[in-house]
Structure formats: C-alpha cells, structure tokens
Image (cartoon, rainbow, N blue to C red; front, top):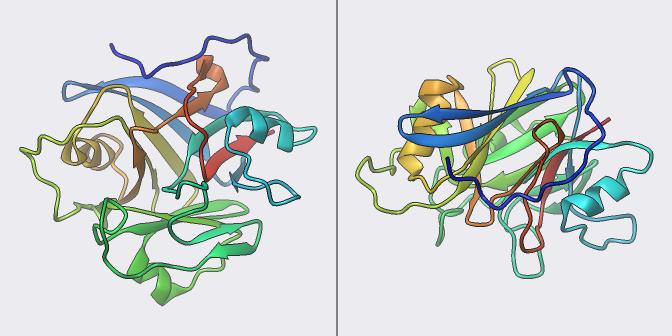
Length: 239
C-alpha cells in the first residue's frame, strides 16, 4: 500500500474516541479516513494567527491552539500563492473571502462546488447555490470544489474512464450534521473513484473536494504527519 510521504514522530496518545482514523482499501485504491463527532469535538478552521500571519503548517496550528493539543488536521480548500483562500472563507466568525458563485478555470470552478460549514456541535457540506439560498450562519466556513457528492449523486462531470489521477482529499457530512468524515487517498485516484468512495463506501449524502497533489493529513492515532509545502486553510480538531 502506497502512502503519501509521512513523517514518523513520537506522539502523546490521543484521548479515546477523540477522532477515529483508519486505513481502508476500496475498489482497488487505498484511503485513510478520519471520523469526527462534530456534536462533541472541537472542530475548527485555521488560517491566520492573531497578527494575521498565515499559519501554514500542522505544527504552527498546534502551537496556535495554546494549551490544547491538535489531534487531527487536514488541508481544507484551495489557496493562492500567498496562501489566501481562493473561495469563501470564515474563521471564528470573521469573513475573509466572499462566496464565489460563478464557474471558472480549474477544479474550484468546476460547478457545482461547495462550502464546508462548521458550528458548535454541527458541520455540513452545502452545494454553493444551496448555501447562498439557505444563508447558514457558520462560525467557520471554507469554499472549495468541485462537489464530490450532491444529495447522493456524483458530480455530473466526473468520468468513469478519466485518466486524471492525483492524491486527493475531501470531507463528507451526515444529513443531521453530527458526523464529518474526512478522507485522503494514499494513491493517485480519479474524481469518479474518489466521489464513489464517499457515496458508495462511506454512504454520505454530500461531500466536498478539498484539493489534490498538496493533500496532507495529520492524525495522532495513526502517528501520521504528512509534510510538504506550506498550506492555506487547515481544518483540525483540538482537545
């Protein structure tokens, strides 16, 4: 099983039940999933510190948590060269970037795209048009794209015979918003394969693509901390 470059480290054991991560083989591909109880865990988005400087790494997020411990993290949306978010972004009630509703180049603009919305006790993936219509009051939010699963259906542009393969990561949520499931592929996969994993294996009604190639995971219970270039938005659980 191939694994995206992971840095072996010594860990303080995560509390039982904090975040459950595991490796999964499905339809000829390898994935790592992390199940977060959004109703119980402190799930947040991270981009900047108090001075407005981009955090950019899992270690910086862990330091920023101040007195709490980062037990899970993942890159959470596309970003520009200065690591500012491409799409809508809210951190702790402060909006940095508005919603981008229109189609455009690249994966982000492959509509429909979506928004991952986090509040105390709940997390939801919304298709962007639905997000604008509902106008949920999110404590944290990040827009990315494309959607992987929309109301139980794969994104209509995904091709079963696609040759575009990358490491990919994303998130799906349950209908009631109490569970968020994050996944990263451990080998290069197509959008169709990745979306099918969320729909058919994880059985989640809505799922959102975060990124590819730069996809990285931090999971203390797996003793995994992927390394690479500096990141933009990061989603994590602190305790």
